[in-house]
Length: 288
Image 1: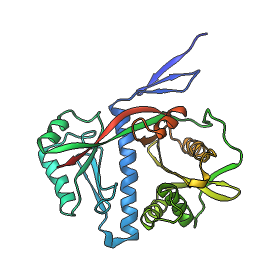
Image 2 (image 1 turned 60 degrees about the vertical axis):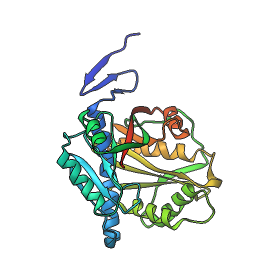
Image 3 (image 1 turned 120 degrees about the vertical axis):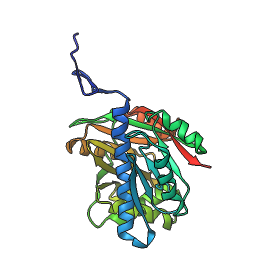
């Protein structure tokens, strides 16, 4: 049986199958900018809700540097070396941005970044401290997952006024404890209030058991906020949330979905089962 292949803008399209997106600099720029923009929006939301926090972000050499508070996982950069060459002066400006706020200096760096950046990082005393599998898959209108969904689980977009419900459900899923963590609930509440964030909830018998979020940036759907409360697990809630977010994003014109996972983790395996591929393994660098 003949197969027609078309090529356009780094995408090979097989008319009988899903498109193949190559892992290259162009793709990395799209993925890194989407995640950077999502985190920058979180910082903006914190600054608006809590002006005393000092939350802010800047752009240096195409990278987004974000301060969300000392110790916050969002306090770091995204996209360093992917968009523009990085100079010693750029590194000094970035380091000063974090250090004058009392924060550690962390950079998430794609392997597609300018190779000269590695020498610069080593020269300035950085060391690798964390790895992330950046995963992606093509999406299109009407996209569906290969695995069947549990009909008892209802996934939907959270309604206005449900930010606290979403935040508490997400926090319970992450903490794994009966009581709520004020820190986690606060973080997720800010996430739910972001201007570009779409919050989704999964219910069984009209009781919220899981959450997920979706951020859209220039055709990229960033999937995050996946969490299921302990008593709600093993019912397929996250599968339902994944499909509804992919379908919603595709309806909004997205052609790529992305997520991050620890290399070799259950989250990575589950994503691969649903058509995600590893674009690259990203390294977080910390200044000694």
